[in-house]
Image (cartoon, rainbow, N blue to C red; front, side, top):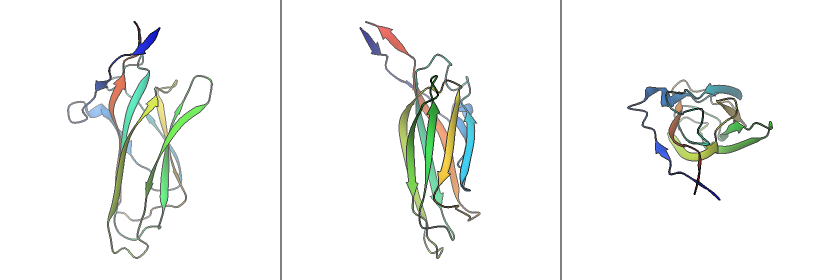
Length: 138
C-alpha cells in the first residue's frame, strides 16, 4: 500500500525561483518552467498559487486555465476567474491555490480565455507554494 508523504512548503520570499512569472493578459497561452530550485523533478504534485488584480478599463469577465501535462499527454487543470470593469471605475482581484500533478515536462501551461484584459495597470503572478515529495511505501 502506498501513501502520499506530507507536502513540503515553498516560500517565494526565500526561494525566488518559486515565482514562475506573470499572468498573461492577452488571450492565449504561456508556458512557465518549474525550476528545480523550487520543486525537485521527483515531486509528484505541485501547489500552485495564482493571483490577479485588475484596475482600469477591462472586459467584464476573463479566466485562466493552469494545466499540467501528464506523461500520457492528458492534462489536469484548474481555473481562476476574474471580473473586470468596462468603465474602469473599480478594482477587482482574485487568488487561488490549487494542487496539480507534477508536469511530465516540468512546465505549467497558463491560458487566458474569454477576453483580453488590456489595462496596463493589471497585475498577476503564478507561484509555487509547495510540493508533494512523492509516494512512500507504508
